[in-house]
Image 1 (tube, rainbow, N blue to C red):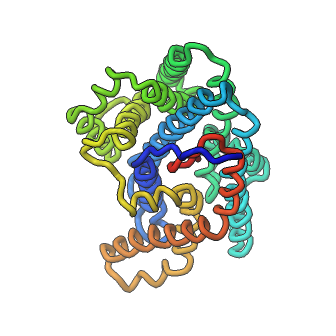
Image 2: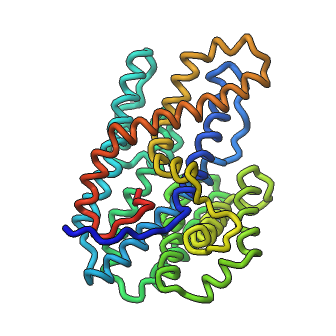
Length: 365
């Protein structure tokens, strides 16, 4: 296949880097008990980081599918799924194998086999919905959500006329169902129906997709509003304030607000030369490039760092222990993810390009 010029959407790797680091730092705070320290309260920084990932994934993949449909008059569904398999499956299953090996070596309890099967078949969101602890595999719930979404999304993009209208309907209906489930939870105390929608955030990916359609069509009113200084400041402020629980809003709308703010920032870093924050330097690009590895490996890195150096930190005061942990774990995760990318993932990424009629410098994930 003759390689066409890559689609250049600068800054998207920087968005990925922010999302990945948000998850890592949040999970460090929740894992401090492994180091003999009090865990920090959960401020859902990890949850918002995942929502940013969802919005970005929906945006980028829909944008590339639209270009493919324009160039070739259709979406090649088989090639789409080959790209997903080559990007996600190798590292996904490698991590599962490494985790089980580490649990065996340290004589830790394995996840319940029934729920381990959910993870193996990209359905870890089901144990998450049921509040079943999955330990070092728990974060795979978000990858399950993504893969389930993409079971139908390329078909939806390929076959649907008036795509933007139907994507909006998808978002609205999903959100209404979530509100109804939330109201039922408040009335009855039954949490699972609400958890289904709160965990399986298909509409957050669809919000990213809606922004991709507007951006692809160069919808001037959308771009004009998104590119204003006021919009950018508000959206960065929303994400920062929600990340540290400083915006007192009902939990039922917080992830939707993060997704909406994220897409405004995405179109700014991708296409606004006057964006107040562009995220286009070497460091954000590097961290975004290895962000899949950062996300996948970080729980295992936290566990191993605690095992290997946790007891040795007792000679320092509590403040210094926190500083060491919050420096060492991210650096170790970056090192592991970078090695994984260069020595393992690249082999599959090269194969993936054979099934990519539209290439992007901010590759699909």
